[in-house]
Image 1 (cartoon, one colour):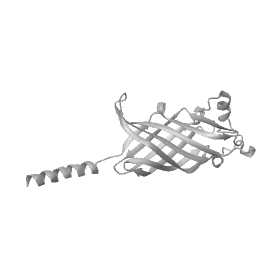
Image 2 (image 1 turned 90 degrees about the vertical axis):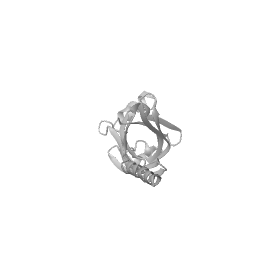
Image 3 (image 1 turned 90 degrees about the horizontal axis):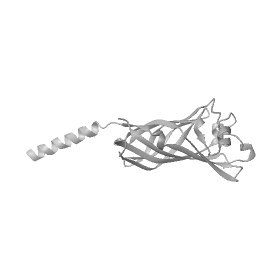
Image 4 (image 1 turned 135 degrees about the vertical axis):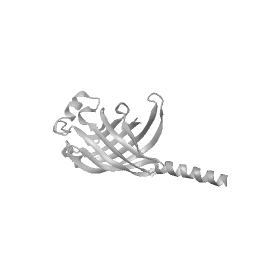
Length: 193
């Protein structure tokens, strides 16, 4: 009888712990998160690559419930092609128009999981004042104890693609440039204390 009571008590404690499991909030680490991209130059002449150096955001993840949200902001004027003249032109009105549209944002939710690891997120991507639904593929998701920050950190490689013309980024499309943009994001986020 004591064994049965002990087992029932243990089951009750586990059930209570699961019922009390709460979403965990993570702040994106801007020093380890870089949205990078590649886009066509001159209709296949070459592929231009660049990244954005400043981003911020919050990820809320409930691994037990297989749910969560993403809210990310990228500062457009931090665009970096590794080419000063191109960087200056990219923020001008005929391309990103950073003065009018200083940020790009993604606000979405996790939609697919492999066990407790998110594999996909769907949300609203806003770029140059245009908002459209975008799906993010999440690979290599991992959480661990950060040896220097002394708290949990999660990281992943995220990818998607979109047609830049759909967002009003139509610079040189009339010259035969391919409008497809590949977006690759290395992201790390620290558990909020």
